[in-house]
Each structure stands twice: as structure tokens, then as C-alpha cells.
Length: 541
Image (cartoon, rainbow, N blue to C red):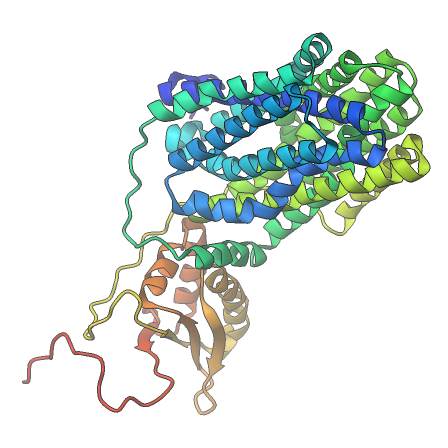
């Protein structure tokens, strides 16, 4: 079976238009980042305020990504994307007016960047999760790669364009260009008419949807490792980007064009890392790639700290850009391939919360150190911490991704209930009975340990395993769900990858038949009368 080419997604008209809009809006964002960074250098002399430019843009992603992920999984993603794009466009227009009128202050600039970050936080989970809504399943990997290349391309070209625009017409022109850059994406979203997703169940309660995403991640050890390493990488890697305006101004004695050249060099390294990504992942383990990325950041930070030549600093930024893309794209890919579609937006948002949280904290941390102890000291310490991040792989190694089939299992059929239940009737208690031979008890416990994790991950509460005192071969698995509709939702969340546990437990059951299942509705108190109507009565013999 041949894999689709990298250009295959572009044959889909909707993806082609959306991808073009994505490139344009990202280009505008990179131009604005140059304008914001250099404007802050001009109006605020303290290094920590300059570094806060990066923190202001990343803080909303840390704060609001989980909510945005729940929105991405619960609402029409096209509408969510439209709202996010229009919000960012209006914010860019207002920032342009404030800057050109001469009313801008450091805190107004940070506030505007914070609002832009709010738009990014709302946009990112829906955009990443919607790839499967635009292209066929077999070309999703190529579409994800193209999105990554778009980011890398704009990261290379955008800063150079931004440096020229700021030098020629000022920061206001950069912000105006960013406002215009949202038009192609808005137009593409208005033209895109995705097929409505079938809704066999009512929309999940919003608060419960957020909790479901957090629960899923907490019961997925591999995801926890990826998220933790993403946080650490964001913390150290942001040091270079956050302090780059100060490098251009103080170390290189340059202006906006110099700053743009430095960002362009970082972007060129990112493009190189993007092209090398697939080859490196095929040759090395995931952990090796991540360790190399940490080492690349450490080397770049140390060399930039001592460089006083523009050409040398540009050269030293290349491994930082490559490392940035290698690590973050790998983290993102592992998260996507480890998560079923029902919770994909929320899982991606939790990962982004961690990685952007690291960037936010790092932007403040490295700026504070640079202000108190000098730029070289801050970059050197960041390099040392990056080395420690590579060493963390000895304890928290990134898992090698195994191709899991995360399509729905679709084996569940609602039972023929004899009581009249509403979707919100509950709580529901489930009892599943097994008969296990003494020789198979250890194998049963091993399988049940995984079954417990899957149950809780997919929404079960108060899970327990019971053993009969008079008949030790008799075991019962018991758990609760809040309502009947949550029980149905719980069963729909099982994936093809979970089928192995079901098969193992079935094989261990003495009778060879399916374990007996009892579904019961709970009452905390004894009702004064029977409050559950019976649907039908069995015929008398």
C-alpha cells in the first residue's frame, strides 16, 4: 500500500483554501510579533518587560486551552474557527489604531497581545482537530505535515518581512498587515461547508466534557510523559525567542532589521528541522529525537550568549529553530496518534496548556534573570537547564509510538430495558460477573488492572473489584456512571485498541461465555412508592 504524497491534501479544494488562509494568517502573526517585540524595546527599557511580550502571547493558551479543547469537541468547529479569526482581526485593527495615534503604552501592548493569545487559544484545538473533517483519513498525516510546514515557512519569511516593514513604516504598519492577513482564512471558512457530524447522543455537559478530557489524560501514562516533557521544553526553549530583541539591541547593536534577520535565521532552522523530522523519526527513537532537540537548544543558547556578530548569531540560531520544530512537532504527533477523536481537541488543548505554560513561565523567568544578572547569564542558565531536560529522559522517557487503532469499537448495543428511563436517569451501577479458575487468577488480575484504567479513563466512577468469600472463583467488577446517557457514552468511547482486553477476559472466564452483566439504577433512600414505571411484563406460562 503506497502512502499518499505530501501534496495529496492540496487536491482537496477545501483543504487547499483553508491551508492558504492558514499560511496568510500565520505570516501576519509573525510580522506582528516582530513589530510588538521591537515596539516594546522602543517604549520600555527594562529587559523583563521585553521578555513579557512572549509571555503575554502564550499565557492565554496556558489559561484557556482546556476550555477551548472542550469547545472544539462539543461545538461546530467551523464556527469556532470563524469566531477566533474575527476576534483576532478586530484586535489587530484596534492595536493598529492605538499605535498609529501615539497612545500605546507597554501595558496596553501587553494587553493587546494577551487578547491575541486568547484568539489563538480558541483557534488552535479546533484547527488541529478539524484536519480529519476536511481530508480523507488516509491523507491526515500528510495534511498535518503540511500544517507544520506552513508554520515553519512563515516563521522563516515572516520575521524578515516584519523587520523590513517595521524599519520602513513603523510597528503600526506591521499590525495593520496582520489585520489584513486574516481575510483569506475568514473567506475560506465562509466557503467551507463540512458535512454535519452524526449526533447519536446529546451534547455532553460542558463542565463534564472538560473533566472527561482531564480524566482521559490522567489515566494515560504515555500522554502524561509527553505533556511533562513538553512543559520542560517550552520552559527552556522560549529563552532564546523571549530574549532575542535584547540580543539584537544590546549584543549586536542593531535595529528592527537585525531583529528580523535573527528571527528569520531561527525560522530557517525550523524549516530544516521540519524536512529532517520524518527522516530522524524513522532512524531514531522518539526519546533520542527529543534529547537531541534539548541539546540543540542548550548549544544555541550558550553560543548566542557569547556572540557579538550578527552573522555568527544567525548561524547559532539555526539549531535552536530546528530543535524547536523537532520537539514540538513530535510531541504533537504522539498526542494525536495516542488519542481517539472523541477527546482529541481536549487532549491537544491539555498538551498545549502545558507547553505554552512552560513558555509563559520561561518568558518571565529568563527576562527576570536577564534584568537582574545580564543577558549572557540568563542564556547560559537556560542552556544548563536544557541539558537537564535532556537528562530527564533517563527517568521520563518519551514512548515510542505504536500504531494503535483508535476507531470506535462499536460493539455496544443498548439493552432492552424493562423500566422507563430518561437519558438523565441515574446513578447507574454496573455489575459484571466472572468465574475464574485459581490457576488463571494472576492473568485475570493483570488484565483487570488494564480494564480498570480504561474504565476510569472513559468515564466510570467508584470502580471496585469484588471476590466472593464463599466461592473464591467468583469475581465481580462494579462501577458507577452518573446517568444512563453517560453509561451509553462510556461504552461508545471504547476503541478497537481496547478489544484485546475484552478478548483476554472472555478467554479467562470459566464458562467460555460472555460475563454476566447487571445494570441497576441506584436510590440513596427507599422511595415511598415505586417511582419507576415498567415498560412491559413477561407473559405468564
